[in-house]
Amino acid sequence: MAASRGEFSSRIGFIMAAAGSAVGLGNIWGFPTQTASNGGAAFVLVYLVLAFCLAYPAFMAELLIGRYGQANAVTSLQKMSRTTFHKRFAFFVGFGGVICAALILSFYGILAGWMVSYAVEPVLQLAAVNDAANWVVAQSFARNICFAAIFMFLTVFVIRRGVEDGIEKWSKRLMPLLIVLLVILIAYVFTLDGASDGLNAYLNPDISRVLEPDLLISAMGQAFFSLSLGTSVMVIYGSYISKEENLVSLGAQVTLIDVSIAFLAGLLIIPAMYVAQAQGVAIFAEDGSLISGSGLVFTVLPSLFDTMGSIGLFVAFIFFILMSVAALTSSISMLEGPVSYVVERHQVERTKATTIIGVVIFLMSALIITNLDMMLGLVATLATEYGQPIIAMLCCVFVGWIWHRSEILKELQQGNDNIENGLFWKIWPWYTKFVCPTAIAVVFIHSL
Ligand code: PHE
Image (cartoon, rainbow, N blue to C red):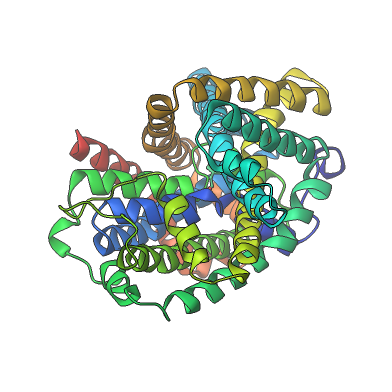
């Protein structure tokens, strides 16, 4: 089984690949942007609570489904089913996740393309081809199509080669570098005027805002997006984990890495916003709201790099390359969802399936680019604020209500003989059964 489907070659391989999927634009772009537009520290607080108390348990449910089923999301869920109704439900949930992954990739590829273009720009500037340098960072149809195509090509290229060769190798090498660079940049930002105001906005919550419906639903969407939940991705990655590994600790480590990197990114970008504002770049409007929502990172960071003098171009290049790689290790996981589904359920050859699905998703990106302002937000909201939490909730329902406790225990015991005596086993099964689905539903109802 392992040889034909691929399996992560080591524990660290899985952690890096799953963390590679989790850590991406969601952490370094999405989280700070959402924080800035949803009341700063109050959002951070709610996000942290939801990430650990809601997303982590749901993440464990998805990993468990995958490792038990040793297959794509639909097949894995169907293996747990006992009745025809369960099987239909399994199809709905699994296939829903696959569609969600495809939808996300269709807009993610565009944003990731921008990262690539911002990595190319400093090189062009150094080569003194200024027209080209301006072209790659200007919002135009041609530039968006071009870089989305480049990014999609890279994603397809890696996925065609399969798990071990493709996904693992990339994640293992470049993620640690990203963390180091973030820490260096944070240290730098704090030497500049205005940073302490940013720190205050980031860490000093206005508690009266934490129950605001918009804030709650955005924080929940962000937490699920960041851990790549509700997209069949973590089910697939779970299916590549060997039966000798301790799932509970693997899941916890990945969650911790993911949340920490988002937190670090906020610690860089929120203070950098205030620094930019102090230098006369318009970041906030008179009423304190943000002037440029999704473009935030592209205003704030280049102006930060500008303050560095001549090494700024070099730092910009390294930063945006690492961002592109972080986006790539996420996008390959998104493509792996639909690909493994088609390969395993419809017996299509892997390279062919990858190419066809890649082209289809790219065409979806092209469609979004034709009306970027409207469609990007629409697809993103649909897939991340609704699709992901709903599918993740249904995975919890599956584990909690369709599976027997004894089956869950048996799967968890593989790689962890002692699980029965630990805290996880005392809490998680009923928590996933009752608390997770209810909490997710309550956030939805509250937001209506
Ligand atoms: N978690 C990724 C990020 O934060 C995005 C992602 C979503 C990846 C869904 C896979 C599936 O950028």
